[in-house]
Length: 140
Image (cartoon, rainbow, N blue to C red; front, side, top):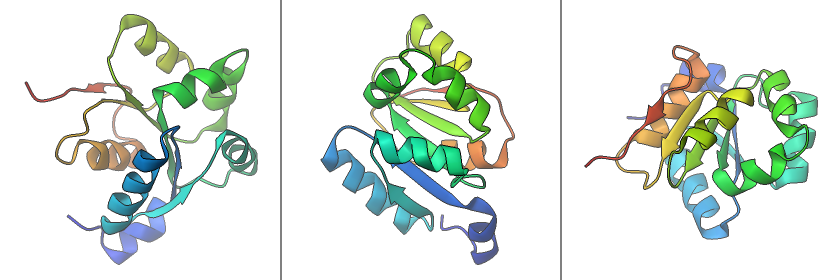
């Protein structure tokens, strides 16, 4: 389902920071088809965008590896204080991952593989702020 034009004005920008270039390009393409304004960024440009509140009406989409590198030290506090909704993609949800995500203010946790519209739904939910962190599970 494509976003309506007025939804785009409220949705803002989706910043994608994932370590895998092929995955980043794929997410950029598929989210663009869904009507989102998407920017790919590395960890440094993501930090600058967070400081400038560049995604204030959008959200961040991170993979587990980028997230882990960025939260070393005080990074989790930086995410939590940004006020920007965060969708975290993980390979396997563990108690430690969930605890770290909660500490960092992650809005939605999505488990890979990203089947169907699970990522799109998580982004929309994060932007709309309707639900706290709740893992989205793979189909069995």
